[in-house]
Image (cartoon, rainbow, N blue to C red; front, side, top):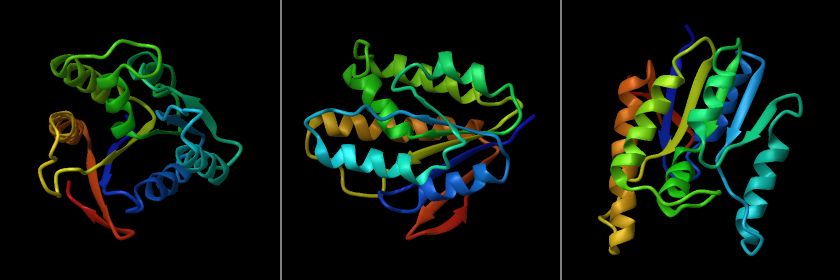
Length: 177
């Protein structure tokens, strides 16, 4: 059975770079991108394009904004690595109904995370990339607090299911589990 790895960290901490480096060690690589490109968001479009350009062209990329439960079983049963980047955007999509779906309630989101976390335990090395949002101040708005709570609970579920949990800070990696 392949190893399941959760990589946590703040914005620009080196999470994605670490995930890609670990994946390269166990080819072939399937990269699951959860971001949705909005035509009026030029900055996010540039970020996504930079990530696409940085990934090796021989990697398989799947754009899966919501349906990880459907797509993961198709790829984790094979040799190689699967990178899911990122949990934060996936949760946002589920919470706000982005990516061809209705918004989900918190319990449904966490149940989805729990199922997906265990789907990743298969033959492929599965690498989850997620933001650690609990190290800052409590957000001011209700929707931001809801998201922060969901992110923290989702990370806990993924960490419990993971064989290894890594924290990226300033490009450095700390092993938590």
